[in-house]
Length: 261
Image (cartoon, helix red, strand yellow):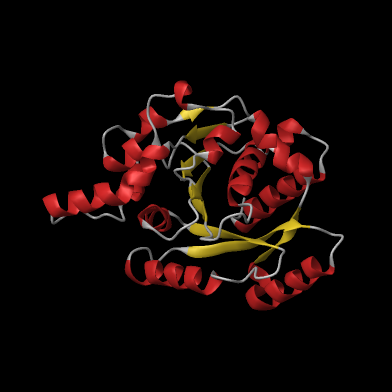
């Protein structure tokens, strides 16, 4: 059965989508069968793997509202052991659609639609990675209910912990009422600029706050990592010798080890 992991942080610009793409690709290189679900209307995970709307007929929005089976929306990528369910701007309308459904059907469970879909394919993959949008709306709530765990990317910059308490409260709420098995997989330090002292200070602060939940791997701030999505490739394909490739390879190993494989 696949381990379902959501990448969640309501702050934008923390390396969430970059990590979703590159962790998924690195797990694929470790011979794990991986599905990446793009759950962000900006669809950056989709374009970051070289896809555009002409390359697919179905997206995650259609899966969640039930207009297509999840199997129909899965696309095999050209990268090792990696498939994706893409997103389009249609996903921005999910809140309105769910309100409409709830008015029409009192038994409609708005937070369980993604979970119900994923349960049909959990035996096909080793890992399912969900790239959430930078908000705590209905899309992210669906991801939390569907997931076994969450990875929280936190940038090594001032105000890094802003909003984390609100995110943790959301996780606790989901644990208590909808998904008692949900846990924090780990906190990932991202965008470290080793030339500044502030980055090192933030690392120390976050390790004090989260303890052993913090991954040993730290993702550096590198130009090559920013360039890779514009070429439609994960960093391990765009620049196999990059320090970022090594970092995400190490992160994938940590995730595998934390899950007993």
